[in-house]
Length: 190
Image 1 (cartoon, rainbow, N blue to C red):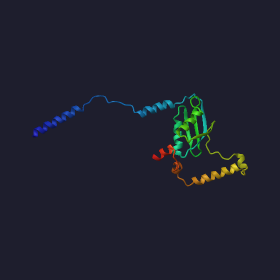
Image 2: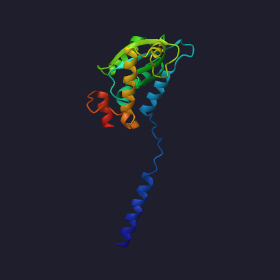
Image 3: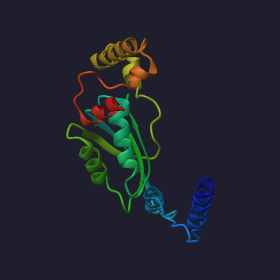
Image 4: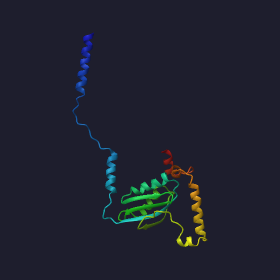
């Protein structure tokens, strides 16, 4: 019986030794994500001689910074011919730099409205430089602060600052509780 065990062990070692010697070359596969990234990089490359334009426009209907504003920003940034896209949720302002030969203001508007039907583009115009701060009341208005528009502007600004003063950064970025938009549903899942 002892000899039988030795022969059996020797047979198993021999089988394993010869079956593990597979000299076939390993199969090399390219990951789909890597292929998409290189394709996106080629698509995203903007001609250095291209005539770039900058556009600013209001986007109405956003309810949160992460779900709404970031989704719109990503969609516009992925457009062929777009060099950069930024959406400022607090100001409801989009700032896009693009190649005029490829992108039109209408295509930018279509991209925004294709994210959700509730988004509306308003006051689209080209600029030499993007605005960096909230627009204040006009100089004339500041000189004569008895005007109703200036008083309303100051009151709304003060009210907004009061509401937001005690909010954490996470609360400022969160969707409204009653928001039913697809972008907010996705943000709440994450």
